Every structure is written in C-alpha cells, then in structure tokens.
Image 1 (tube, helix red, strand yellow):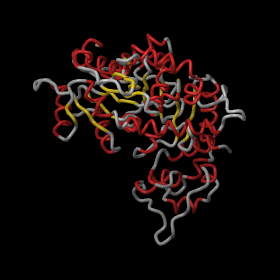
Image 2: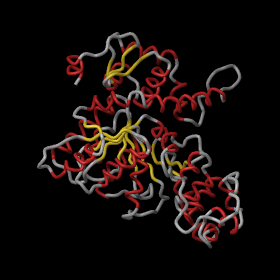
Image 3: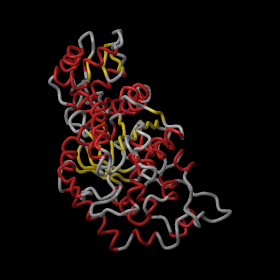
Image 4: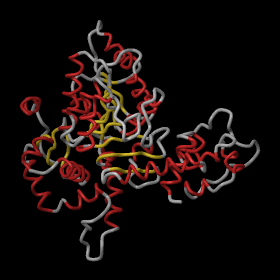
Length: 422
C-alpha cells in the first residue's frame, strides 16, 4: 500500500483529528496537538514513537491505536469496503486530468506556510497549478452579500495585490470572495479553497469562475472527490485559507461572519490581519470595526498591506530556495538543469535562462515597474515571471516597495509616481 492510499483510508476513517496529526506530524505539530475529548490514550503507558509512514500506522494493532488516543473500533473503518471505495474514487479522479493532484503532508509539494499553521490538513486535493500554493499569498475575504462599494473595493484591492505579484486566496463564496477571485485571475492567478470535493462547485452559479481558477490558478480542498457542501465544512475550510496566506484582509463583514473566523485563525497562525473601515451605519462594516478594536491593523490603501508583509515574503522565499536547492541536487552530470523535472516551480525558474533574466532586467529599467507593467514589457507569462522576480529578490538584485519592483540601488517610488502607475 502506498502513502496516498494510506492517507485516503486514514482521512476517510478519522478525519483530521488531533491524535492522528500528533502521530503523523512529529515535532511542532505534535507538541500543539490536543487529543480528542475522552481519548487520551492509556494512562501510565509511555507514548508510542511516530510510525515510519501512514502505511505503517495502518498496520499497527487496535491496541496501539488506542494508546495513541484513537476511539475504539476506529481502525476497522480503514479496512472496510467504504475505505476501498474511497481510494478507488480518488484514483479515478486523479486519472481524469493532468491538472489533478493529491498532496500529502509529507510531500515536498505541500505548501510550507500551511504546514506551519495549526491543524494543517493531512491531505490536499488540488486541481489546477499546485505550484501556486507556494506563491506568496494574500487572503481577501468578507461578506457573501456585500454592498456595491464593498464588492468594488474587493476587486480593486485584489487587483493591486495581483499586480504586485501576490496570489490572491479566498473561499469561492458569493460576494467578496467571488469579486476577489475574478479580479486576480490573470497575474499570477488565484487560489480558491473550497468546502467540497474538488469535483464539486459550490455555489453552482460559480461554475465558470471555478473553471477559470482551475485554468489560471488552483482549486484546493481537504475533502475527497464526491464530497458535497456541508455546513460544518465551511468554518474548517477557513483555517486553510488563513494558513496558506501571509496575511488576511477583511473587506466587509457583519458582526457574525465567517470572515471573522478566518481572521481569528490567521491571527492564531501568527499571520497579519487587516481590516477596512466603513461607515458607522453600514452593518456590513461592523465586523471589520470589531476586528480593528481587537487589534487588527486598519488599512485604507493596498500599499499599506504590501509594505507590511514585504519582510514576511522572505519566509516564503526561503522555502522556495530550499526547493530550488533540491532541484539543483537533482541536476544531471554536466551541470545542465533538467527540462523534464516534476517540480513546476523549479522548472519555471531553471528554464528562465540568462536571456530571460536579461529581458526582466530590461523591463525593470532604472525606475522599476509594477507586475502588470513587467508582463507587458517582457512578454513573459505570469507563471514564468513571478518566480523569476522572487528569485531575483532573494539574490538581492531587486526590491519591492508599494507594489513596484525596483533594481537595487534605485530611488524609492514617489507618491506622484505611484499615482501615475495606477
């Protein structure tokens, strides 16, 4: 049995329970995991060592599972006919298209920021471009029934983040989510974290948006194919949105809103939370005002968010650097990078040879440029340009200020210059 089959069986039987995370995710995750109520293992027994793999956990006895904190009889659910059917359903879904992926927690493709967040999912189902999960991301969330001004603001701010080279992440819901996704499709794409299986679209009215995100970004979910929309899935979906992003921006939200759950989860994960203020009489702004009172940063311009998270982007860059180092170690004799690697991020960067980097340098000029300006000047695609810019920033060849990429040593952009660029 391979790792994927084992993770599917474990997920189907146990979900993303704390005892399972503690068993399979040693280290920091095990330290902060809280066993399920009523199942704390056998008193006086020393803790069992982490299993060598998910498959090894499946081969442990019922007694060993009980010592780990599992409910009685749970292990049997990994061996029944429904478990086998779940594996078959995932395999059929994966075989249905080249852009379909199942990424386990120990897979090198698993996004590093999400791995560091509380309660990371053991398994992610992704349709589209899985490398987008590694991009620096900003989550834009808010009301399902926003005011017209809130909807317009969500699209405008999402566009500003995308123009600065950030992936915009949200939940595919109506209202603010949909406006943010639609505005950020082109450069460098958007991620929708859903509360259904990857083969389902909820709400169904977003089928065309769903398809566009698959084409230019990624759909991600912890739920296997065939899972319908269930009310209890939506709050748990929000922890993935918060865990993937460097920061969460709440555009409009009532006092009782799922967006506030996302903001709380982002804060618990140690990420920045920003809220846009609104008119006192606007009921859709009261959730944002509550967040601000509770410590979220008040922002009235996207540049303020970009400036605040600039340093944090280096954390994503460090993880990306590790992936690049791994790709270098896989290079064949003679030093030429492989053009047939399985790692899309590494492939994009290593295929960006000196001629491509020279095009980016020329597009930057002496005064720098925004992401959309660099696309137009260089003729590169967003998928090629964004990782090159990140690699150049890590190498100290450029810097980013207020969404403008500048060659190192250039004067910072002036307010008048920023206004002209807009």
